[in-house]
Length: 297
Image 1 (tube, one colour):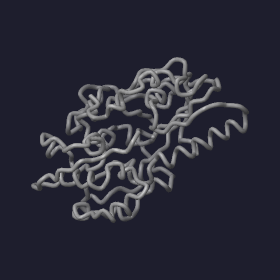
Image 2 (cartoon, helix red, strand yellow):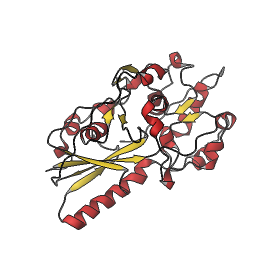
Image 3 (cartoon, one colour):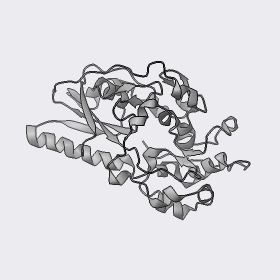
Image 4 (cartoon, one colour):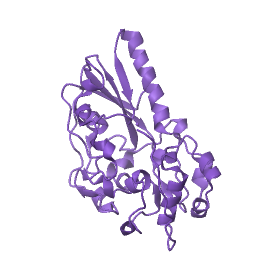
């Protein structure tokens, strides 16, 4: 159910055993960083996922995690470890859940009672034993809001997501033409999708982030559908400099826009993917010797 995301099937042994990533690993420190924006896009606009409003989170988080590791080493001494931000075979949601930062919801996202689910997850894997936190209980109850709202029926059952049906997959990962059978189902999303998070009742507790680098450029917030449809490669480079949107490249974004435009032919395009996710709001630790179950992608 991963479509062309074959990388999700690679290095399964490393996903289960952090000692293959950090020899002698004893602890996984999971951290969350809020990205929920204070301002949103123009209502008359094609939509991109909120995580892509500002600077690419890889750039923002990785340096802060390195600072955290350096701080630990300065205080304690010889501690070996590595930082991970959605860039290695690490079960980030599973480890965060095992660390007690939240629970895996029916939409496969990590949910919390305090701040919902609009945050990035990162890890610090170290060879230092710590006092470990414990998993929390599931609080989804009988709610099916995310399943009912998904326009492509990607959430095939509670806690099971078919990644190959997700709007995020089609608009970011898919290198070929978007299947015509998906026409009219994207609800104006042209990069990523937040539908299953927007409808989650726990996200009524989301609070705006305080990270300036995640703030969107004013040009992005002001863009209308006409602006999106007429976007030039130069405008793309300026508005989305250091943005996650660059992952789909200009031609990929144009493909997506043309796909969601009403009564317009679809431009055929081939999208090339690149080779190869300060401390967070909350942090938890888990013993690396007993990995938890893998969450849905």
